[in-house]
Image (tube, rainbow, N blue to C red; front, side, top):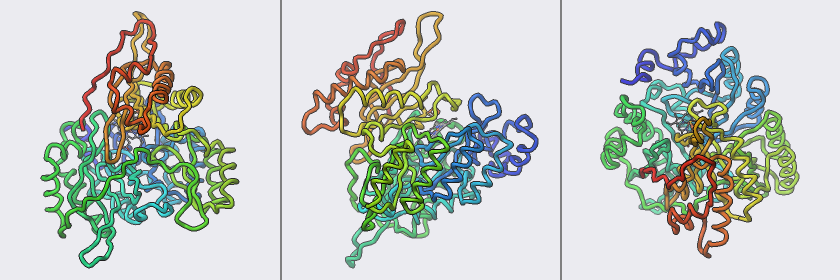
Length: 540
Ligand code: HEM
Ligand code: SF4
């Protein structure tokens, strides 16, 4: 049994709430070291350098928030979090600089507006993500937020699921583009339709299991079943309990559901799911996969509701200050329907804006630094937390992504979305495995006596959808200061050499590692050995 298992067995982490309240009075020094782990179940992580500050993650199911909830996000950002908050790659918000004294007050404020942090971190089902334009997108299969909400409620504070071998990530979405990334979730439920024998159209879900990134990425595999809407909770229950009962509790590095699915094979896994159901699912149809690599909903788009549009605004690096959050809420109230959505590319969507007011709303957003007219590089860029706050980080990330995007925008004339995903270590919180350009932080040795500098392994060609691929490692240990030049050179090479049918992913597929590395024309810092293409094995 590993150390985390011992701590979970000694006390269910959900029971740490009362201790948390006690610690808020007795202070940081009084916290039992084992309780730091349990506090993750309430969204709290120690912040680097573990000197008394915490990071808090709150859950935003389907990325769907009211402006009242967003104002509470703004209040907490202003009052407790030194004025900054981050939108995450699972549609949540994170806050830093919190002290234990303030935690109960903060969580109570969120509870009053229906926001929970319970299950935001820890070995428990995490936020149920979804499509950020659910209910308004004319191309959606159907609005799956009601089913997502049922799953969210089923998971919330439920002790049946609160001691899993590892974290558990799910998505329930009706988006035809599969924007919520079912391929990299432990369970990905995507909306489908089928025609019944009597000719009726029936709506339901297709299910994928066992996807995930981290140091060993796997794409989820499809179960051969059609799941009617009202049966979805039973299938989620079956899958989570299989994981609970059979997942690896010895080795946390092999504990995620993806390892179990891989070990058993999808057929045996499906048999086990079916054996836990008290109904018999029909087999799946051959539902088509979306081919489009790029899946955000940023920009101005007509809604399915006549006369209304949504505006997707870009938040480069996902970081907002408190004034921007208040302003976002004000704009959503003044121009829209009092609702706002977060995206897994760390952006914001403002629904329900009357067409006649779209221009004025876009202007107000731009004035608040929430950019609407942006380059395709900017809107797609994603960065993880990095060494500013993360104990596991090797490198700085949030400032670097801004520097890279600004440089590339000036240096390359390109009108195609190129997704740059940047991480401060191999864990892939910023999803470098699926970026067009994936950057994984590392340290680059300098000459003797000199401290190492931040660097990045540059990999290319990741994508989801019909043609899912993880990135191919191309250049190792490029100093951080060189990365923006390497990317600009590469993209200029692409613009010059692309053929008519190419998008960037095709271009990467068509070129060898050496050819792509040559296009980057990296100049290396003194004392650094000439790198070779990494060849890091990536498991599919
Ligand atoms: C203190 C340490 C860590 C911090 C600050 C951190 C931060 C984050 C953040 C902000 C996200 C965004 C998604 C969300 O809201 O859930 C995330 C997601 C993710 N984290 Fe971490 N993380 C940490 C540790 C880890 C570790 C140890 C692993 C793997 C072993 C990991 C793997 C991932 C992956 C793969 C995602 C991808 C997003 C997704 O699943 O869609 N993280 N993390
Ligand atoms: S990818 Fe690594 S550095 Fe970035 S937040 Fe995750 S654990 Fe921290």
